[in-house]
Image 1 (spheres, rainbow over the protein chains, first blue to last red):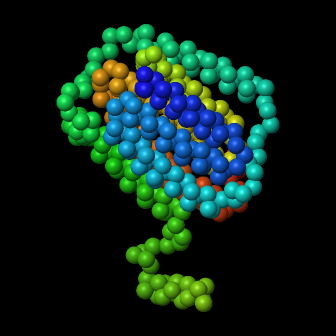
Image 2 (image 1 turned 90 degrees about the vertical axis):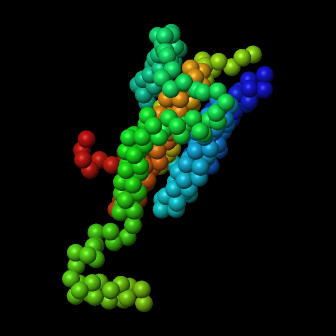
Image 3 (image 1 turned 30 degrees about the vertical axis):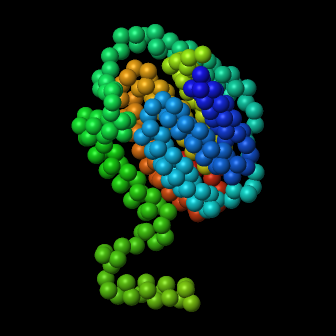
Length: 190
Length: 101
């Protein structure tokens, strides 16, 4: 009963928030609505018993990703209203067709998958976080490490792309060049 | 009234359709990124629901990796956006015609 109420309330809130994200003309409204929608989605994870996933959703999405977007928006001119494409009839028809096909496929998918067997079944009497740790560090250890390397590469790429003077390398320059660069910087600063 | 797997799949479909409309409609690249986040989140809901109703942890594992990929995508994508904005002063999708695609 309470599960149903919670599901419908959070479903309504999430759909409303994401609808605002897609339709609003102010980038700041879109950002705040997206952050709220992320938190409402974590509620679904808690209802479904995936506690660890819900906590990760709040920490990573509303903590890290939204903060990153907020910092990114400081670079861009976000006070101006966002221009939209003029209505295209073919686009609307194509979108509705795609959405309809998607709904049909998703409804048909459970009928095909009647004979699914759980590969890593949920154990009774153990917390969700413990189970996730057991599966993640035994069966999914290599994807976990690959994801770690991918995050490292993404971090280096983000720093190099958005940092200043990343085309210069102190280890590849002579002492004279470094000194010349420092004097140039002093002139700029003073 | 019991909430079943189909409820969650319908919700996930609706959210995915909203994100898809956003991807097709938006011209500003930052708001296009927001729409892709909606797509990834709707898929995460479907993964968690299937994981719960089939008693299998694989769905949650996939959701974790989707979250990791989304985080790295945002880091690299925002870096590229900042570089483009410094060079051209706008992030409009329609004005990016330098490759004549």
